[in-house]
Image 1 (cartoon, rainbow, N blue to C red):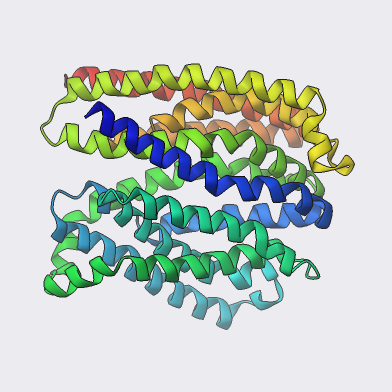
Image 2 (cartoon, rainbow, N blue to C red):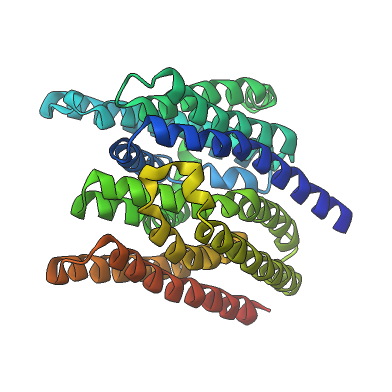
Length: 408
């Protein structure tokens, strides 16, 4: 079991590393092709896509992995695509009739990208359920590669970063759908899935988790949206790029840890074994703390040695201070991402929702009031954001631990 766990983590982490190598190598070129305004527009588009996706599918995709039998998994998988399709068609019609949204390049591609992104995520969850980690990581690797390469082909267009993201999502949604041929065969075998009764029995749980994830994603993407409202696109681009660089370790390591943690936890809790789940979670947490400290020190050395600025280009020197502050925030986020969705996994969605809602409220009040009262600079904005986020990250880990202890 230990060998299989470590082997699965290696597959995930190796796939994540390969998936990020090309984007990392090409980033220094893209920062010389596109200015911070273009990166700012792209950051807003990407954040809106992720946030809206969680509302459109009601998070039925998550339950593909946690469903106890394949029939329920198929129901969740089908609904994770059908529901976004219905929402996309309905909202698109409303926008065409009542709003002149076609003149805005962000909103033209937003809803189609949201639908395609949901199909892509749903297929990834099937790969994870069947433990097809090679296909899981291959898909993500191709996706990251296309997102970083396509903007080169579209460099004459101001929206090249957005178009590259859209076409990468389109290609991967189709590719992963084809690779999941087994699901098509299973769906034919269990044709009568009784979706209406299934929605009635699961809607309350799904909507609770959907709201929890919506608030959670707002916490992650809130700084991008906030800077879009109160700062120039130049500042948004600076913040987005700094945020991306600091979060790379989370993609390399924390995401694989989280995927393996989720799959392993589902098997442990199938027997209501909260004690072993608690022990397993603490082991992951301790290892994450050690890894994150090493990563933070490494990034500080690189940044203060001007290696990051040399890599990005001289026009991005304003990122240096922002990165130095975000590094410490990244430490807490790495730890949190490593034990992602603990309270959801143990069936305590309302705690996850309330805690994230409090954190989002604290961020909103702290950042917006500080800006409108004191007219803070971008650096002060980042400091306030990091302090509030770290307090709630630590609090959420403590709260989840107390919940699990009460179940033991």
